[in-house]
Image (cartoon, rainbow, N blue to C red; front, side):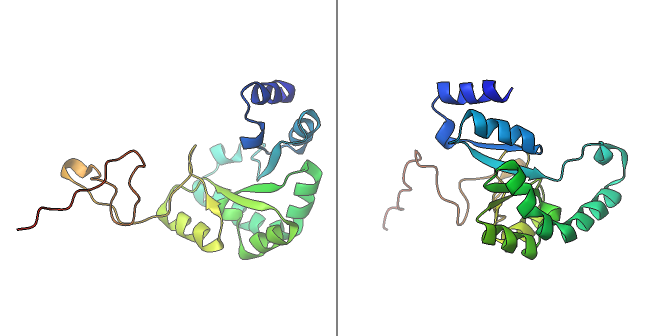
Length: 173
């Protein structure tokens, strides 16, 4: 499977623009062997036993917070074993100590499953990029809503789309 991935990336000229992420160091090692130029990212933690589907959310949250305490000591080994240059971490395992350790090791840090504004503020406070489900999360900011809650225009502090026409000044009276 890793060889097929690398072949597809080469075919489409995407090797230099791709960050391959996996919970499994052996997958990242195989990708590195197939294409040394690929950027690799170790994901953590891996719910190998599907506990997240069986336990209530407070229990899962408690488990992730417990993993947070040990991660600064473990992240170097995880990255070295996988050959990764970046860490993709669940936002609840992030701590100042983990981010500092990653920076000392030269690892980029990304957060995943950041789907609410409180979690996003915490992640931004720690100084990393945040990710939501399948897309990059944006920093929270004011939103302008029109009828039916529809967003109107780019809103304060939001850049306009590059293809949008420039705003016209109101005529002088």
